[in-house]
Image (cartoon, rainbow, N blue to C red):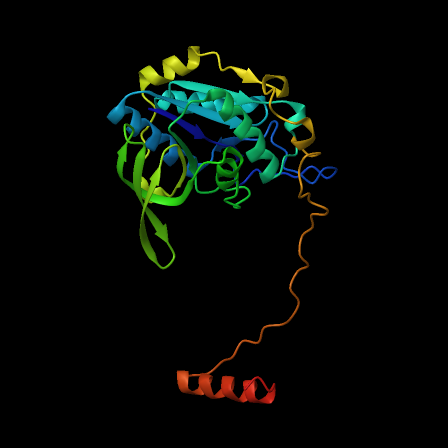
Length: 266
């Protein structure tokens, strides 16, 4: 079984900075981590390998520093890792990101399953995973909380999806893309041997020239259908607060009622 895990290196939530010219996140030189939801996708890929054999390939698109996120995935147990980095990819929105990743995945084919976290904590859109599935023309199962059954021989999978109104059991054919929620497992820690292997590993870097099927018009900021026009802080709230005083809750309630009636709130 070949499992491909798409991960993203995201800025530490206390270190988010915006480029005032492009209105995009500044990632170079910023303290970053693996998107927490993606660690569950990595763990599920490793469990599938332990159960069925095969390999786990981890893929990310980002600046050169994203190599560290891939090394962490390798330290957890991933077999291979690919970094997509090129100035042509800079400024990609979710559509352009999904398009670029899908072209890289085509080069990595054949595969049985693609795993993604349900969303990234910097954008919170949850669009890239489904976008990859659409670009590859394969089924997608989102918000997966459990893989109940999977048979590579018959190319069949059954999963449990976590929805707002309950849980849903879905059967599907392989290959398939799953976005997973944190209920699915508990990610493992990198091992000492894994850390040594990751330290020594040379991470292959693919630029736009390594993706001959990719249309340059669909890459990066130029290929992004959505663009940020302006970023600003909302104005501070105005108004005054009145502190009611009284010896008993009944007196306070009476004062509040009188004030609400006077202001015609009730």
